[in-house]
Length: 332
Image 1 (cartoon, helix red, strand yellow):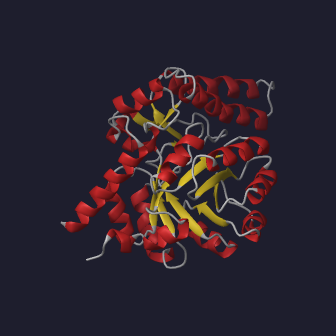
Image 2 (cartoon, helix red, strand yellow):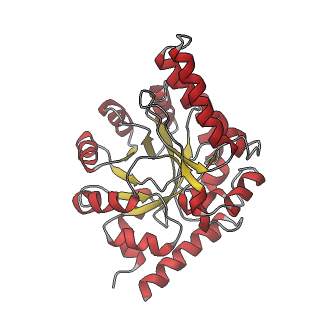
Image 3 (tube, one colour):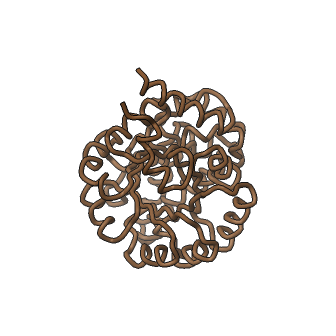
């Protein structure tokens, strides 16, 4: 019988941590305190750079280092207008692992990170893209299914895992994300060939998370069915669906789309500006909820496993519970 240590040994070695559990990079939530707490508890914290300018990212990396001497990573959005400068910051600060998200990274970006010794992790929404990313030189992949919170793709975690793990898990370490909240599920994916997992929603209500008490209360109160994807109202204006707990902001987003599209049709806005205005809605709405605690008008981005978040507790307790569940499941 395989032990948990054996099952995720490759992921642990790749990340350089005790448990192959990555923290999902959640805007406004995955900052120095939560990232350091995850790494200190034996997992692998990841800073969400999101829309940060380079100077702010540099300060965040340094502030995280002041709280932990354990490894952690940085998540960069490939569509960020200052991506090159952000990569330069990671190089200057010698960030060991850079996670590239929000699109297909260029070979140049991958090579720039690898040139200073950084390891590149990239998200993979389909098998064909996974093969392309490996050819481009990425060191590891993250499979993230539609059960996850925030911006999501159209395919479930379980289907992506079946499609990708049997084919690519021998080539590079693969981490599975989306809808994971218990140790039994972690074991299932490890047995399928994953090297580790990534969890976001499960850590939002950690004691060390700076998310507003109102935001945490909304998570604790929510059921799985309350975390729903946003709806696109016009195919001419494609919207990447965002999974969040339904509230007034969900309705506001629908209204926002109608308003912006009407402005475009009347000639007030060009298509690109209209698209940007729709996308920017979520960035502002998320800060409103996470930092200001406005859980009605702000966005409550959450994965479907939010129904299994039942209390506020330290990161170390969350991780030890996951490991205990995993070991118990393996012993059955």
